[in-house]
Image (cartoon, rainbow, N blue to C red):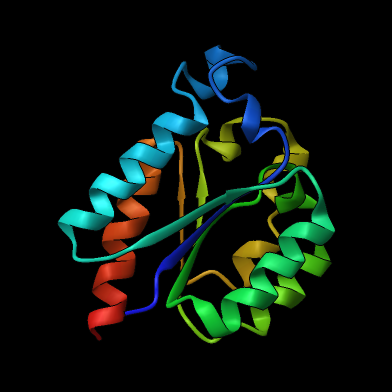
Length: 145
């Protein structure tokens, strides 16, 4: 089976250091471990990536068309601004799950709109980093069919 691509957008490389009162103290490496353990328990494999650059994320999504069974994406700030990421996701045939560590609906009003949600098969927000594990459980259900 093809792996599940787990994509992380800008500033998530600073997870655990940047605004821990909003995003918690877990690092991106902790999230990667959580995803690998969860995927293994579900019989899935993962590829875990992060970029601060919109174009790099678009290219990773393009590559996923041939290489991934599903995408779990935390687009971070690009959630609210990137039609390019939406367009790339629209060209991907597998399941897409959007994840946000914080509850974006309890935050600034500009965070309430997501371009990615227009393509996502599910949106998980406000569950902390556990949202990634929940997303993988949903992917496993969708891939089983």
